Length: 497
Image 1 (tube, rainbow, N blue to C red):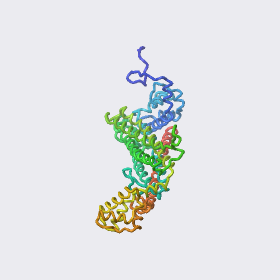
Image 2 (cartoon, one colour):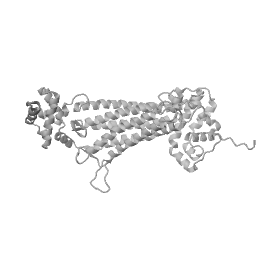
Image 3 (tube, rainbow, N blue to C red):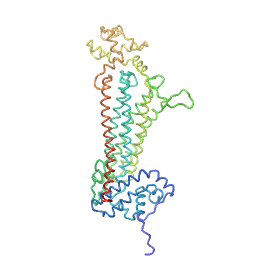
Image 4 (cartoon, rainbow, N blue to C red):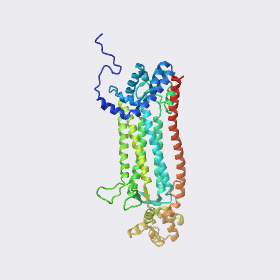
């Protein structure tokens, strides 16, 4: 018996680990200790409350453990760091054991280590993302409201299509981001389900009320099935997909805004505060922020591919592959926050050259569709014939280096005679009303159209929706604050009856 090895309750099957250097390990632990340890303490407290409430742990022992949890000093844990304990949760257990002895291990009785810590960490990362998306949407609506009458060419296939306004353009951008924001909120809802009390995969024999655990930790409800609790990865994919849907329109709009700041387009000018210059060419004023935003899409889509590939070929249970996927959430959420904030900075720091915008709209033939519509309505000409007449007029003027302002009744009648066999007899006033881009925009009063009144209506409606989204987000944040208070009150009822 004298040769028997001392009992090492921290070992696994008698094996030994190759341990990192003490100071290097301490430094790595210290980087995240002040973030990780308080979260673990909350989970431990909730578990102790539930286990004591279920009658599986005597209140006296529970009081000692809860008292030690209340007195945890993270800096002291860092100072006394022991490299044998490679996970923050085990480092905390080591520290608690030093304070109250072996009963400290009861904080993990009937539990596997991850639940609910990864979901708590994930939701903490997603909350700033929701807030940043709300702020970006507010910026877009504010700038759009300033430009409901700023007429510019609209583009399809990189060519002039129909006149629109800069405000109308930004509202469309906002709407794409609003849908992505709703998907981010849905990802948060999928994340914020409590998986604590699932055991390792089959549940626990401890008499814990999982709904109470969820409530004390600020979750919206229980993730019920015990194996699903440790196996599910969909909430991470939900977030990555939502961010992809956010970054795609950001990348596309950044590309257009970048083009519109060029010397040739000159419709926008980036402010000195956020422009980049060249180390060689002193005249350069580069909108490199647009390039950074385009590049961000690659990082987000790469993260989506990474987590999907990690998830697809592993067993449906608790594996390291699943843990690796959880660890991606803070990274991709932080990238999303960056994208939202930089996009808001870009939009808010662009000077709009309204005179250049409307001049481009006048010089092109972007009002051609309205001229065809006038021919149909006023002269009862079939649409395809009207379309052909206007196409012929545009071709003749463009070949001569002239613009839409040069369209006259005579030119239209010449082309109409060739195409339809007879002149149309439109007046100069009818042609001017149809080809003026400002008048064109004013006439686009259909739902969702570019008319200033309709754009203003949409901005007002979306601002009200945004206000509702902000209130919902504040309620989300308040729920976590209230849960912290309920948890401390529950602990207090045990420790100070």
